[in-house]
Length: 143
Image 1 (cartoon, helix red, strand yellow):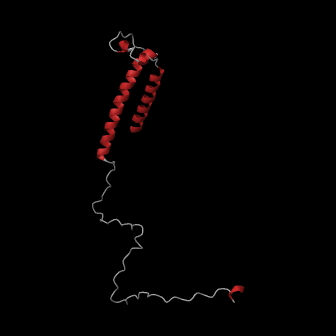
Image 2 (cartoon, one colour):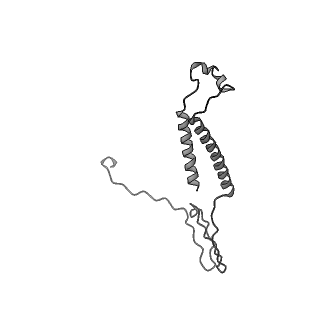
Image 3 (spheres, helix red, strand yellow):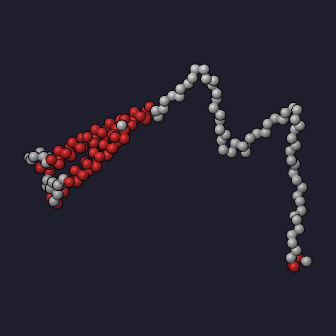
């Protein structure tokens, strides 16, 4: 339904643009830029409206009404949130908590657990004594 409304809205917008561009401008000479044609626009004698003007008016009204309707529809959907049906729950089903996935890096931050009374305490490695580097191959200049 929504796809059809948006498609019709886009078609009306494109048709409105085309009809407007097809019309011949009134008073498009230099005198019209300085108000020479204002008497025919405001209060002047208006002749018979052409077919393109009537189509422009109809398409404009349809476009404005559809824009208002679609924006109202979008605001109502946004208020309600995403529509998801609730999951069916059986009456005799046991309630099992969902497992929690560890966050990234949780293994490196894990705390050591307390030692069991039956197990010996683990010994912590102490600082090691530095070891001498292995002798490298002798070069003729090292003798």
